Length: 96
Image (cartoon, rainbow, N blue to C red; front, top):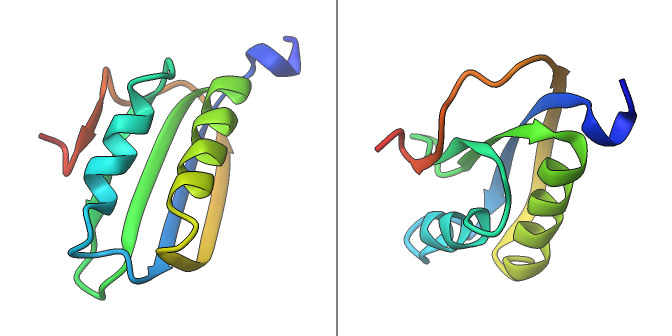
C-alpha cells in the first residue's frame, strides 16, 4: 500500500492552556476540512486528547493544521501512532 494511502490512527495529548479556551471547538472546525474520523475531549488532568483516524496524508495534514492554528494554547504534547483501520465513523467532540 502506498504510504500516502496507508490508514492509521494518531492519539495526541496536549498540555498547556487547552481547556476553557474553545480548543475542542476549534479542533472540530479544522476537522471539517479533512476526511478523518475520531474525537477530541478534555481529560480530568487538564489536558486535551485528540484521536485522529484516516489516511496518513489526511490525518497528518489535519494534525498539522490544528497545531498551527492553536500553537498559542498548547505547550507540549505526547503522540502515539498506530497503523490500522478506523474505529469511528465520524469526527466528534467528546464522542457526541
